Amino acid sequence: MKKLLLIFIFATFCFSNELNTYLNSLKQEAKTKNSNFKEFSVKRGEEIFTSKHIGKKGKEIACTSCHGIDLTKKNENYFTAKEIEPLSKKVNPTRLTDVKKVKKWLRRNFKDVYNRVGTAQEKGDVLVYILSK
Image 1 (spheres, rainbow, N blue to C red):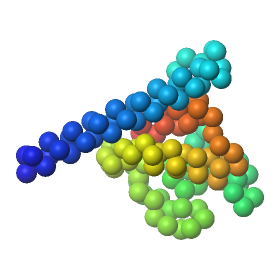
Image 2 (spheres, rainbow, N blue to C red):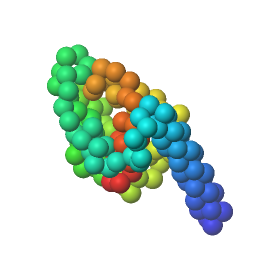
Image 3 (cartoon, rainbow, N blue to C red):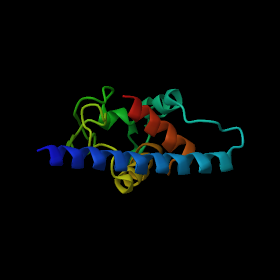
């Protein structure tokens, strides 16, 4: 049992480093695009996450349309009605551990809500917002 716990803790630490590496690469890209950029912002991330836009299928949606306001709770996909597990790592420690999946879902969700790929700054802001929950 102890070995299993240690393996889980080690895997979580490694994935956290992988996410930190991804956030650092987004930060470098954001600085390249905007010389005034300093840090990602939870506040900007919240604004991006909660603001409504005419998105996929011409519907007015926000990230909260599928993920809800309380990221510690399950919610339902606006288009498919499939259940979505909580985004908060506090209640769902497996969230945001696979950077390949993080990139995939950021790309897909920005296209669904904004009808475009998010910028490096927007992605970083959204990620730090989610991580704050």
